[in-house]
Image (cartoon, rainbow, N blue to C red; front, side):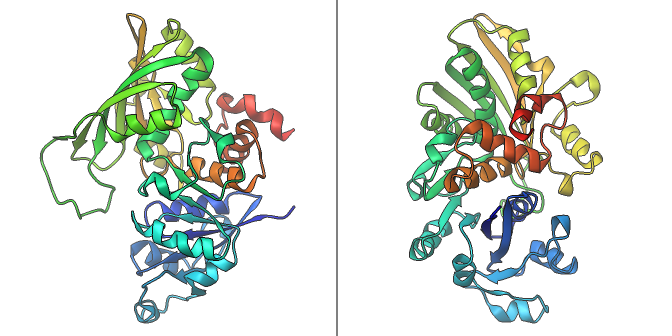
Amino acid sequence: MKKIRVGVAGYGTIGQRLADGVAMQEDMELVGVADVVPGLSIQALFENDMIGVNGIKYDLYLAQGADRAEFEKRNIPIAGTFEELVQKVDVMLDSAPAGVGAKNKEIYEKYGVKAIFQGGEKNSVADVFFHGYANYEQGVNKNFLKLTSCNTTGLIRTVDCLDRAFGIEKVAITIIRRVADPGDYHRGLTNALQIDKAPSHQAVDLMTIMPHVEATGILVHTPVTHGHIITVVAKGKTKITKEMALQEFRKHPRIRVVSIADGFKGNASLFKYARDLGNRRGDMYEIGLWEESIVETGDDIMYAINIPQESVTIPETIDAIRAATGIQLTREEGTAATNKYLGIGKNDFGKEYSKYFD
């Protein structure tokens, strides 16, 4: 089987996880990663002899504007230039800072290479605003796809889950958003909450992906770094009971139903649990959904989810590679392949997808 050749632009918080995700796919080959400065992620990779997951060497290419001397004085090996990397791949995963991806697109077009952009870019950069579960088929054989943000990715998993089972008319969300990623200092130190103008972009983005669902939302920035929490109030086309919702959530491979009674008291509990599981970097691909948060309120259903912001978009990005290259043509087959290679759904949650790998 010919493997899909993949490159990663930007080896930061998201890029290093994208590289790992690709390296874990048995039907894909990580050709290399590119960055502009030898930041801590690159320095750590160098200290590990440029070896990532599964013993795979991550070749490093210099992104546009990089100072080769900064890499050479640290003895970091360089495999080539950004354009040389692009010429070797079928798909580029672009996790460069917002706005840079749009400039990189000119290079992708020059060499006829497909690209998947992360949520920081404008929607206009891509042919399709993409989510692996909600609109996979729209991305099939397209040249440029753009992923939803971390919050929108996790939110849509749950809304799409209920929508496919019961039909959803509208949702109202509140996002308790971490202010920065671990290790980020650019937003300074703070001891305050900040509210954004409603509706939040996540609600607007949900309606773009799922135009038949009406959505609105409020976002509150909080001075923490590990995970967002979203509360959702959803109105179904028919009444959805707690038992009905819980049954569907438990079936979804990328939703981990957890319980306060078991010790999952909040975002830090889930982060610690991922580390205790031995997950690389303490990552978790699944969102956490608290069983005790599922409440019937009149004809609506309410629940709360945890978003592991550094890793939640990785599975949907791998889905996007599958859709864009057409190696799997349906949502069921594409997400099942991604889940299998990322080790998602090892428990009973993923059994409904096992038929694709008999």
